[in-house]
Length: 414
Image (cartoon, rainbow, N blue to C red):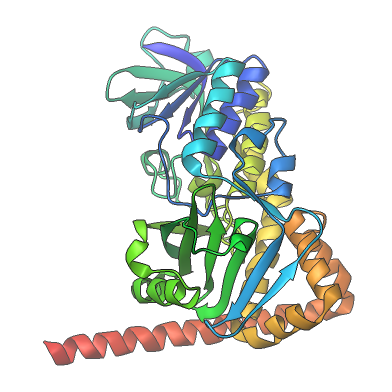
């Protein structure tokens, strides 16, 4: 049984970043992923400038497009374009980004085992090991070997083995997405190379998108899980509205977007969850790479304290997430409720107000945060809190009504 200081399960953006940061600081790190690299994962592939700024790694080798503008529509209606003079976000593919970040972790000294699936994990000191040192050691079994470590970081998704094995009961509000790719052909307008498409107001809690990549457009829709049955027809409508031949959509795939309920656990002793495994997805945008990088950095910092015997477990990591990251996500969740309560006014302001458009751009670029927005509105924060609650109640009423209708239909059909 080989020993490491830290084992990281899952070599996505969060896992590879945590492994690299720990290896740079001298920790013995094992990074596991069940699939062979390069491997693709369903994801819009947007890397915000704010996310990129968290890394001390140059992402230019895997950036395929740089976005300077957006084409907006409301419920697949009339479109309007807005352009910004500076980059708004970068576009990549997870098959390239994840492989690149795993390579950087390996270059820093981490042992990277791709194609080695985690089978189980548990607490307990190894036989014959000093109990005082390993009383909180973690044992990991894979399909081909056994390992032990002082710390285990779960970056294996919301339904990952790490969280289940240690009963880290993170609570989520769950959204779902469906996406496909349209290959670039001469009939696709050139502006799609540095524009994104955003169709708003037509999905329950989500939106439709068109994201440019090097040789294709990623076209997708997202919504709360209760509206998941609408995704396939909505994707077809979105493709047709933007002038894409639906029959050319390839690589159709769905995925979950876990949104953490504030305060729910993401740590148990020396075990911590990061990124999507911790539900750290931006509710308003559905973007998770920024929080993947941010949570990985916090987890790596806390793991070093544990390795130095300054901490008993990783509990301070959850405190750091609740203090440094969760407030942003909470405001984002409120803004999501408000926007979906009445989307037309927001789109009208986006179309007509240069000031609002530039504020939106600075928010996307990371020069402003959701908390900056709250500070900007000052005394209106109380009104925002109130109407966000009203919007949430209306959404829940609609969900309950929809469930009753589905139940009634099922009974009649029976």
